[in-house]
Image (cartoon, helix red, strand yellow):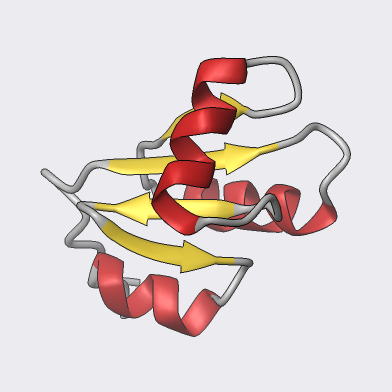
Length: 84
């Protein structure tokens, strides 16, 4: 798989018990995508940040250079990250 994710800022807002969060993080690892994880179950600032961006409480919320993806949509994420 070709990966053109260099230079993209990826943040995932997640919780430890979220299955879709785990899938998203596995997808990132498999494709060499560096990301910052913010656990909204313990990090109240991250929780407020996520809610202000999306107006909702569901996870995962994935921010790729300001483009928000709510939930785990592998095809959409691959497109935003330039993964073929």
